[in-house]
Length: 261
Image 1: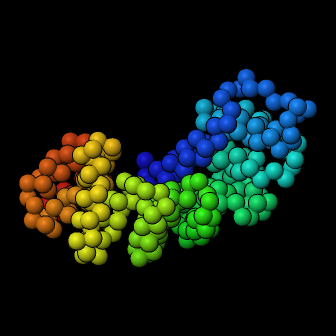
Image 2: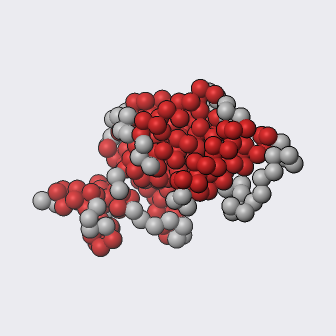
Image 3: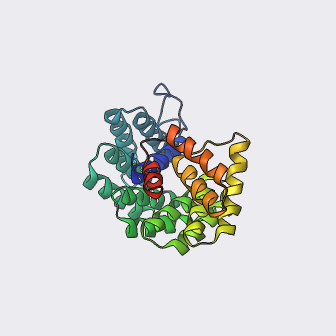
């Protein structure tokens, strides 16, 4: 799975987990006993739950019921965009993302999801714009994640200074974030600032030692390079063996073999 697909998968999981307001299809929705707003939200949430289970047909049906109550309900168009994105109907997905944003232009969630979509299409400049808009809302629940994703977006554009700023903001708004720590270590290594790279990677290794996270291919490759810079041969060898045994098909292991020639 490439980096763009990984990002989209992460963002979809975040969104769907945040919308789990209904537990099952059996939840009754009675428009006469609840407000229209609650009914629309319930139908939309049910649609997202169907999507999460892989049932896009019933997902569309549920969301369309929300639009029957109010054809200008922005979250329903966002849900349709996610459904069509999952079905690889790219043009339709973008159409519905834009419709949702036109109805709720201040929604951080909508800008975040559209930004993830654009990232998946490798439209990185546009994606960074949308993700940056999402980070502007200080009360957005997934703001730290969005800062992290924005950092990855800027990396794709080679804008490493603002990528560093974005990852740093992710840590400041969301506490300990392993991916941001690894990416900051990598970015500082690239700029030959070994001390700063060591600072962030040490924070990450403390999480490893506490068994709160596991090494990824990327973190091991960063660890190898950092150990080399610090002339820690034994540590570099340990990371190399882990990379070879755990991720033998990874791009990072290919980079290691190229560097060892």
